[in-house]
Length: 367
Image (cartoon, rainbow, N blue to C red; front, top):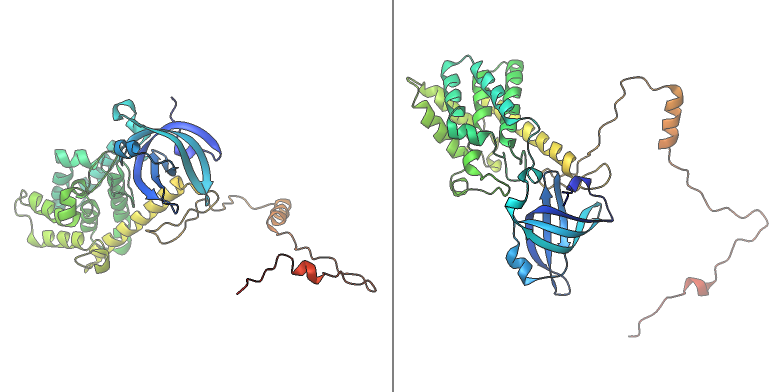
């Protein structure tokens, strides 16, 4: 059976294909009958699905993270794709290609990793350079860094997304440190280390969840542990250098209400916070534009951004518009004038509406 991808599905289309279950809930309708509310995913996006006929066997065999073969019809509900399932059955993971179901970064992780190493090798503070190189060349850290997601669902939530986010922030650090005349060694260190312990906070694979360590400790505290662990191996590592790196990590969420134990109190710490914020938000916009299933220019409401997003490319004119094209464009954009009902000519009586027609269908309830 040929794999059909969510991004290619059209409305009013009968299909049969394999998808990954992201969400699987038993719901109860207004009539008291149970049904299944499901989110199906693959490497191109996700899609709501409904199975209106409840089955205890289906509830027992299928759950979040299960691969399923489904047959049914694609509809559009409130402007977005919705799949009405007629048949569903479990598929074993060994029978599918994981690449069809896991979203991943555009650039090869090995290429991104080499770029990150080159940036570290170019730093001018010998202690910070050695610290960063020792961390990112550690065997287990390097392995995880190349494949881990940056988040469970919000930003860069796809394979190698963490490395993509860290590299993007680090490249911004080089440019913006020069522009604002701050110490780029610390800004680069903050951009590399601020989220690197997501490799301990999250699991990998097709069904990413928070680990026990992620729930109980978190990547902020783990980041401080990593700095201590690797700085102890460097002879005479300066105390104040380590303290300022730790401050950057503790303050990178920016505000107390966003879970930051400290607010940025150095220019370098504040710049790291702004770079992280900008790259995470732009990453969210990018993934929405690529995967949102709503028809037209606009996405559905995005809760974590508190807005809808315009998905189409903005107008671009490398050459001036010719006069004929300009008038044609104006005619296309100009709305049709409203047509008013013709007025009776002088001397002609206005059309009458009988009281009976006006009150047709009107009922008065008896007290």
